Image (tube, rainbow, N blue to C red):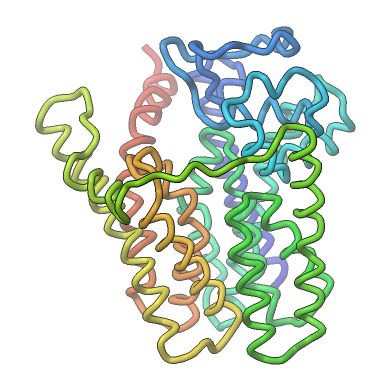
Amino acid sequence: MRARCLGVGLLCAALAFTWQALAVRYIYGGNWTGLFCIGGLQRLPTELLGERLYTFPDSYGYDGQFYHYIAHDPLGRSRLPEYIDAPRMRYGRILIPAMAWLLAAGHPGWIDGAYFAVVLLFILMGGACAACFAERHGKSALWGLLFLLTPAALVSMDRMTIDISLAAICAAAAAFFPMRRRWGEWLLVAAAPLARETGLALTAAYLFWSVLRRDWRRVWGGALSVLPFAAWSLYLNARLGSMGFHSREAAPFRELAGVVLQPYAYPWSPAVNAVVIGADWLALAGALLAVVLAFRGSLGGLRSLLDSAILWFGLLGLALAAVGHRDIWIHLYGYGRVFSPLLLLLALRAVKEGTKVGFAPLLSTLLTCGLHFASNAYRILRGLIGP
C-alpha cells in the first residue's frame, strides 16, 4: 500500500514538474524565476538583481514573488521586507520559505531551486496522503490524484504560492490521524498555522474533537502545538509590527453579493466574457456549496476528526463569505486557495463514503482553472509543434 501511495504522489509531482518545465521552456525563455510571477511595476530588490529575475511588464505580479523574497531572508533582517506588499501577513506564512532556506543551507544561489523542490515535495506529500486515505477505506490509490486538482495545488505549481503546504497537511491529517500517532499529529497541527494562518482551523478542529472525546492528552498536546505559531507571531510583531485589523462598515455578505451582481469586467468579446463569467459563477457556487455541505454533514454529529476538520474549515468559509473583501471573491485564485482544504476534505469524505455530492465543490472549480491554464497551454503547444 505504501508503494502505491508513494507512486501516486510521485505521479502528481511529476505532472506538476512537467508543466513547470514546459512553461519555463516555452513561455519564460528558460528563466525559472518566471514561475514566481514577478511584476514589472513592482520595485525590485537590489539584493536580488543578480538573479536575472524574469518580470511581467505592465503587471504588479502575484503573491509568489513575495514568498520568494521571504525565502531569501526568512527572519526579516535585511531590507527585503520593504519590497513586500504586506510583510507582517506574508511573513506569518513562513513554512515553505523557511523550508526552502533550510534546504539551501542559506546559500543565496540555491534558494530558488530549493523553493521549487519544496513546492513539489508538498505536492508529492498531498497526493500520496490522499492516496493512502483512499486505500485505507478500500478504494483505489488513484483517488489521490484529486489532490492535484485543488486550486491550492494548481495555483502553487503555476505561481509558486504557499497554499499547497496547508492543503498537503490537511491530506496528511485525514490519512494519519486515525492511526493515533500523537507526535505525528502534533507536528501536523503545529505546522498548519505556520503554513497559513487559516491553518488554525485545523488546530481548532483537533482540539474540539479531542475535547468531545475527553482525550485530555491530545487536548494538552494540541494546545502546546500552538506555541511555535505564537512564538513566531511575537517575533514578527517585534520585528515588523503587529498585523492590525481594519474594521469596515460593510454589511455582512455585501462584498460577496457585489461580486455576484457585478462580476469582473474582462477585456474580451461579449461571447468570451459570458463563458468566463459563467465559469466564475460556477466556481463561486461550488465554494458556497462546500460551506453548506460542511454544516449539513455535522448535523448528525461528528463521527471522526475528518468531520471536525470539515466543520471548522466550513466555519472559516462562512466567515470569509460574511466579511471577506471583494478582492478575495473576485476570482477563484483568491478564495479558491483559502477554500482548498475544505474542498479536498469534502472530496476525501465522498471517497470514503462512496457518495457523489462531496465532489461537486471541487469539480465546479475546474472550468475556471482550465480556462486560466488554456492560454499558457496553447503557447506551450505552439512551442512543441514549432513554426
